Image (cartoon, rainbow, N blue to C red):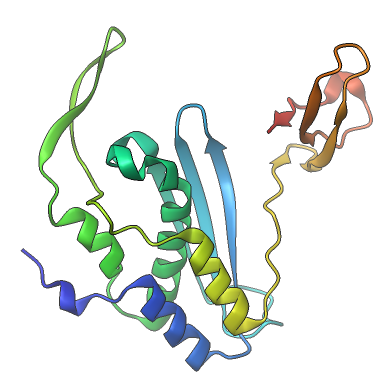
Length: 197
């Protein structure tokens, strides 16, 4: 068993970062997100100074929606992103490798079967969420933006040809609306698969 009092929350870590690096900045990027399957991978970077070329600390976090309690599944992306940022700040600070928010999810974790269908054998995994412990990604970003005066920039996916281009509109053929990111390649046959939202 572990002592939760020895861990800090993401909010406490954000406060420490702002107090110690008032000219610092942070960046959270979604590396991969599959909303249909419920997987997300985020990377967080923290910089001691806004002009630093390289981050002082980075962290990558991967999450799976179905490991959350049913009432918290809709917040899985926000939780993974804020946890990723908190752990990046923790690494910069030189403290524990997990936040109190992370450890509160682990403490009550019983082993239980969560995946079982025709394609999978039953898999024993730990549940990582207890009711009411998730920190909102939106509130974390708002705190960072408010304290650091930062700008929240939407994550833009990349393909083998570089940063993808955002497009939205209405199809002339079907009348359906669309929005998403397309490959920047000018050669149609070389274009990568679009990422539609």
